[in-house]
Image 1 (cartoon, one colour):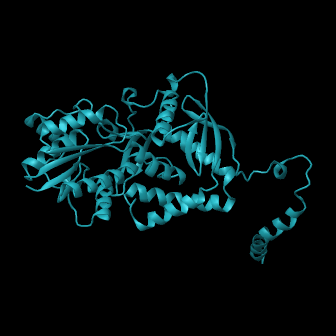
Image 2 (spheres, helix red, strand yellow; image 1 turned 180 degrees about the vertical axis):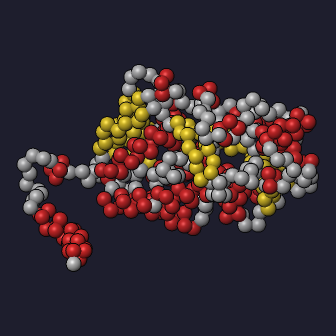
Image 3 (cartoon, one colour; image 1 turned 135 degrees about the horizontal axis):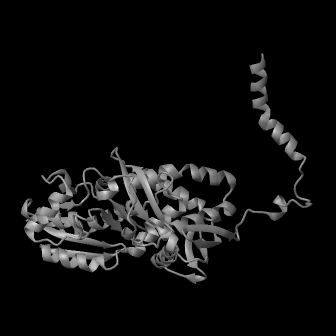
Length: 397
């Protein structure tokens, strides 16, 4: 029998897919579970994969690699899709694909499979990444093949085969969690007018119920990468976990958006990204004093492209390699500390300092100084206004 490596989560879709690959495709299924920070869900999923008939189950703790090699590079780039989404799901997919290909080579598997639907972005992210890493791999995407039309059909199939499922018809929205965020979509959330129920949230307190006092923190960066919180050096995953806790307690990081999917439709998603939100605000603040003005503006012009490449699934593309090198070069002097206050859903910068700061108090002071001649601004303004003056004169003719 041929083997297939399945990206397995233990959720409704992949639970059904594992059985479907055995029954309908006649394949031996090797389940791969990436521990990206799902907490207790990982052990439960591994046990469930074995009970459902997987011939082998790989569980790999990739939390440090995820934050170090995917989350932090995106942070250095200030990557935000469509001005709001911090790409928590999109950043995890290329890492999962990378590990799937490694296991496929080890197991001699001819196929890889995933649970992404034919309407979503994840099918593109998984498959483009797998092909980029192993061009001869064969891919099975059950949602594009089988006769099931909805998650209701899947729940009926699960009952038929005695598969325990984590969702119910009363709570049909699905979630995807990793160390950067948790996302919710589907079911009642498909109506963009319906407010998300408070009991749905996992990582964050409601801003209204957050403490009635501010929480002050300091984050130290080295070449654009956070390394310390309140003076304590932490591993990448440990640091993000610490900020998730602090941010979550203070109601930070909730997001409710309608985004443009790569496949062409609009989709409503609700996200919790407490630690990532804090890091994004802190990193931007440090760049304001460490980056040259034109470098700062040029780098900002790359945010849209970088974010689209991540969102659309092109992490392993040549253009992304080029962008990552450019971003990395820009971060050499982004060293220093940012102080923030967390309060009821707000994350406010209250201070920033750097040994590489380009901020010069003597230049900007309103007091008397000996380093700046204000009269120099006269010619500067005249030259910059010259083309506008000519245009206005021509209009009068």
